[in-house]
Image (tube, rainbow, N blue to C red; front, top):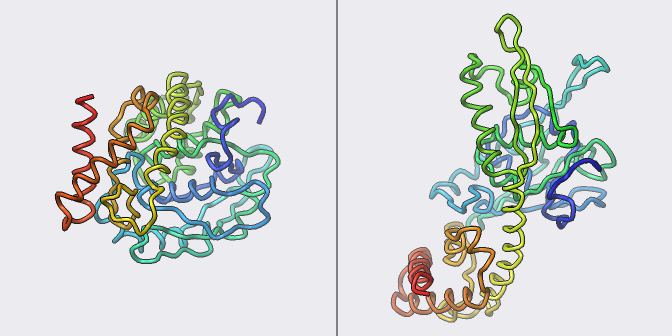
Length: 343
């Protein structure tokens, strides 16, 4: 993949997703959160693995990139795990002329499990997925998991993967039928105007705002009937710089997080320790950081932020010792914001 001018080169392995192109072209009907679980687990894989380990992902980390986790998400874990073990990815085979000759449907996960109260889904890929995810030598695509998780629409994520696969060529042409098949849209948005507005334009706008690449496109028509779409792929320089800055800041913030987590588990919350996360856990430090701009994140002083968090949590814990964790952390955010605004 020498032609790709991308953020993923030079990134640490655990942040990079590597998928065979056949898999990216495959058809599936996973929801956004299911896609995020899948991609987050792919990023955890080491390129020299011979087989798949049991892996885990925290639901709150993949549900919403902004950290907003709806109250009923843990009641939906049964549905999510059902879908992960039951849904398949359909890989289509084509001859040299591009005509479809058949397909194979692969179950993605062999097992999914959840321990009540943990907020974690544990899963293991099916062995048949190894040819698409392990020891990849050619015809594969790389991208940062953090970029993927910025996208909210499941169609945006699929189009993003499709275009990353062709980033070095700067364009991708797909027939309208193939486009619908890839995105499992055969029975949705039968009018092209609706497909264009609800899927293509929405993805175009979201990638331009959040991803390291974006696209423009041309619709090929015959007798005014749409036949194919030609995508033109562009580097999104402004977002690339933003993401680079954010990645640097996140490395910096991990040190902050470790500093607040360094207290013994037996310490009371009034000692300023980072609370252990449960299924409904809210962390004031995380929420405070999410409200900061990119410029603020780049300039944060880790000692100051850690002191703000510890002071606020001690104050709230002493004033409201009998209040639940969520209330305390929410109050912590308020106090941190006030202290920040007051310099």
